[in-house]
Image (cartoon, rainbow, N blue to C red; front, top):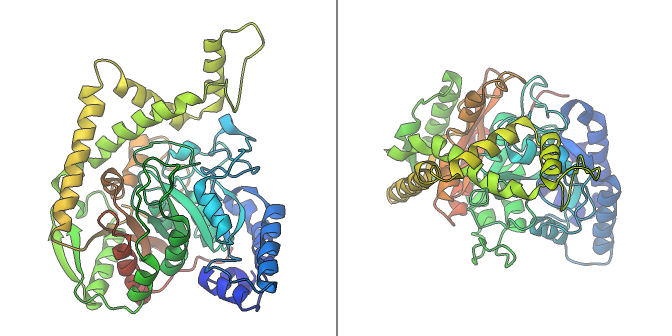
Length: 491
């Protein structure tokens, strides 16, 4: 493994800007690392070596010409395959879009290019971001670099695994019910879900439009903040985009790195106290809480009574929106088309296409959502779930009147063995227990490594009010300064 692949994004950017390493050297080192280990990890679905090296050369040419470089110029980044990339395959982990090359870039990809980052390729994911383990990819599971027989979390396990395996220093994920934070927790990396609307969804293949939030993944809190700053901000092409600048997340991360949380009030959610969590995870979390106290934070207990209804509410709202969004995959406009032999009706072609193109978890959620939206059941299921969502938002508002941020374990358990939960969807859905409330509320959340349980990473989640993303970065960086970062066994 090259020394360049073990550097943080901030360190790489400094090396490139100072002429101590070229962007091409950095990029080639990461491409070599991918070639060496990704046959075992399977973090990537597509590696764009030619495009990456071309982008790196452009950065080197700009530096040679004396142009000022941005804080992430020359830094490689891996992109979850849920974001469109012009001319580069975008499959969303599904056979129904196999080989599709979009004619345009997502806004976040545009901003990555403008920042001078180097896109290495597209990472593996649960099909259409529906899953908590990256086992539901149509192209096979991704494996956790800490233990190749275990899952890397989902749905963005490919992005997190690429970081943990040192195949990339930065990655982009998307978070609908925890799909950035959960992979971060079980791979010992940092995953941040920005405020909903704080990052653009233009070019993000939709799963659940009122929940989907793209965001940064990294190995350190500062790197995540730098990436958040680069991709965030208002986008007029996204009707849900917030017309406000990104909070100063980089300054907050640097402040937190001083290890001083004096005057910061953190709330522990009463309803999360031990609910469904492994003893080892709870023990590591309690140690992290003690550490935060020593850093000066005041810890108080906060009740959010409706959080106990978040899981069932989410699994009505998200499938309902998925049922609507995935109706566009009909075998007519783009993507896979099966059975169009001139003798079958449109309905038959559509049915055959979806049968061949969608995997079992996607079909399950489409059916749940279609049922919940059907005549006679809409008010009883989808309507009631939206009312619960309002109550959860009120719980957050009340909690943030008492504290600056909330903390909890990110996931109830460490990475479990591949195949252990695929036969029991309910057990799989429990992975979302602690992360879903934040999505229903729309606020930001971050997972930062806080220790090991049985030799596997445990993540601590920090949740903040909407458009107060800087608060979570400060707390996360302070904890990181005290407990350090975590390195998996060598591959």
